[in-house]
Length: 249
Image 1 (tube, rainbow, N blue to C red):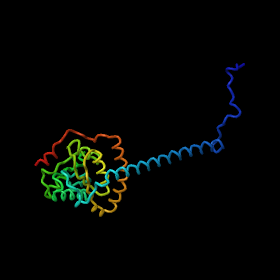
Image 2 (cartoon, rainbow, N blue to C red):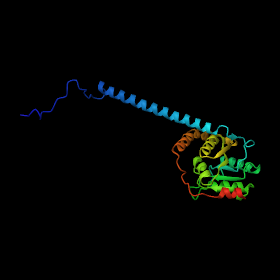
Image 3 (cartoon, rainbow, N blue to C red):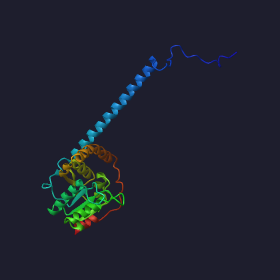
Image 4 (tube, rainbow, N blue to C red):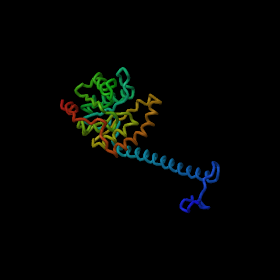
């Protein structure tokens, strides 16, 4: 005979019983899972929207009053030109050429005394800074006045390296108008007295401009994250005297 201790206990009569698929118990579990999932999704969307709106708001506040037309921008020692695509033949894309032309005009009108070109040179076969430098020199900017930053992998890195590697304390940052607020905001957050001039001529590229404008909204969130975390540039490196030498000439 089996003892009481060995006898399996029967479930209480009022305990919930698992039912076959489609039973009331199964339906209740499914509805509960759906409600939890829906709440998680809604909260995630809301958090994303808040991050987007907050980041864009921060960028605009930081840049407010510091973006000018080229004719009105106050003088500064240095123009910082942010990199963009370079073609396989080494020539700047239309977007980048428009930025470089603003830098050329700033130099020719005496608004700046040196130009720091900052871009991606992460591969031997791709060199944004050299393409930018050669373009400016070919159009009359003296080579001793053009300094290359080969580790400007994004806007945050370019601003951080401008002050922490090249020692720049005041500059005019140059990029497209959809990007200029973020560029000025990040440079000012880095401790630079930064103003900005944005290019609108690249609007002629139509869909490319539109896609860039859309991408810029998400880039503001990344910018805010970079600022909050205070990350170092991808490559910080030692102090370089290129800009100091260019201004001393």
